[in-house]
Amino acid sequence: MIPSENPSSLLQEIVRMFYLQRCGEALQPEYAGDFAHPACHTAPSRIYGTESRISVPGGWHDAGDYGRYTAPAAKAVSDLLLAYEAAPSLFPDETGIPESGNGIPDVLDEARWEIEWMLRMMRPDGAVYHKVTCAHFCGMIPPHLEQEETILSPVSTTATGSVCGALALASRIYQDYDSAFAQSCRKAARLAYSFLSSSPPLPFHNPPGIETGEYDDACDTDERFFAAASLFAATGESMFLADAKELLRKALPISFGWEDMAGYGYIACLRSPFAAQDGAFALALREALLAEADRLVVRSDGNSYGVSLNEPFPWGSNMYLLNHTILIGEANRLRPSERYANAVQRQLNYIFGNNPLSICYVTGFGNQSPQHPHHRPSAAAGKPMPGMLVGGPDSYLHDPRAKELLLGKPAMQCYLDDVESYSTNEVAIYWNSALVYAIALTRPDQQLSPAT
Ligand code: G3I
Ligand code: 9MR
Ligand code: ZN
Image 1 (cartoon, rainbow, N blue to C red):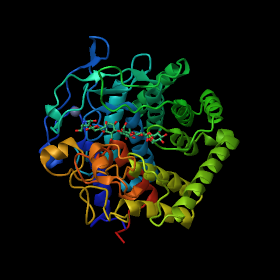
Image 2 (cartoon, protein in one colour):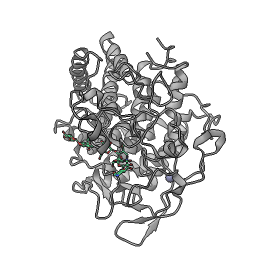
Image 3 (cartoon, helix red, strand yellow):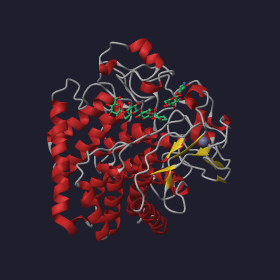
């Protein structure tokens, strides 16, 4: 039930959203249409607590706001790279971005845009700044009009671990396209790892005066595991393998969220040419992933919409559902079964309209889709940017509009197509990326079939 007149245009638009979220370069009307704008956020950024300024241009705006946050960036990049690796033929070089036609699939050009920014966000000692944002969220203005100073918030070990893992992954994926770039990713990943190895946990909390997104995460063990596993997967070095095995003793959830990144360590290892170096470890990863998929599929089978999420639904429920879909889709690659394939398809069907509100949660597609996302460029343009996945139902009612209008509703109906409802109707790069990855896993190495 992929709701597109032309299914490959759906995937293309979902990937093009990243281009439209680019920060630090002018978006030309030729590529961006109504969402063209002059270069934004180009001034050097102040390091919090000091008067020093450094330049960290580039990357993507995180969401409906213009912050740039490294931990969720690492999830978004990892999703895109793993999606590409699973199904390269779904990702052409002609999607209408400035790099189209350069001989490199556009999705890899786009992910590189973010990776190069992540490299700038790394300190010389390998630690990674948690985010660069203004002190407060701005009004519903286009990006180039947000002109308050940008501030680099302190480093965290959650961001450092996630970025390390994503860079190590990148070093494998870009090897065939640009080995020098691949090598610089690997070198930076090693540097981040050396910082992590000698650092106690540095969890992040907004420091006084900073009010933008927090991406707080009390536990950095899963990010450390992703870092070690991904470096092992990229280099085959036994030190990283030993660390990954040790960290895995801590019963980490096999998840793919910005706050729970262990799943990416699993996939990096399972896809690595070095996996065979320790057959018992690879088998343990495989068995654990399949067992988790089986558990989720039981839930999906028992739900009338085929949804594996338990209630209550969290902020960004659509992403959590897609993260499950990714896990089941990866299980289906390891051990193909109709049951896995059906669960993947049913979860995507829910996203695309088979839900109690009959809404397709991707802007611009389906019979009914969000018209008023909490997304500053859309609000400023007076129309929704296409190809964006909104967060979806949040039964905790995390914003005042939701509290006012949704009290007492069943979890799947706790959604408002209202620009004020940032907890249900915002968008985010790492929600779109999860959708890209989940779609790629429906047809590894094949074209998407027409809508059914
Ligand atoms: O982990 C706890 C869980 O233990 C608890 O049972 C549950 C119930 O309260 O909450 C869980 O924490 C939630 C957390 O997300 C992880 O799911 C918080 O309540 C919830 O408030 C938090 O929401 C995050 C939100 O920012 C507020 O911090 C979203 O995941 C996150 O996607 C969202 O990200 C924002 C950025 O801050 C700013 N940019 C836009 C972006 C998208 O809305
Ligand atoms: O616009 C902000 C959105 O990007 C964030 O996800 C959300 C939660 O951090 O906050 C939004 O900003 C709101 C702020 O938190 C409270 N005042 C109203 C703002 C929305 O216009
Ligand atoms: Zn910007």
